[in-house]
Length: 40
Image (cartoon, rainbow, N blue to C red; front, side, top):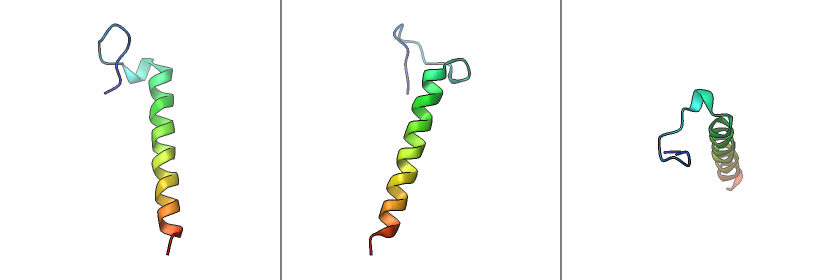
């Protein structure tokens, strides 16, 4: 879980950095999946 400095769970709807982190993670998983598909 993504947490802010104060230790409370991040409110993704109001936290652009949390949204960006989730976006990077999702794109990373997509990239990994596409690479695995290309390997015979």
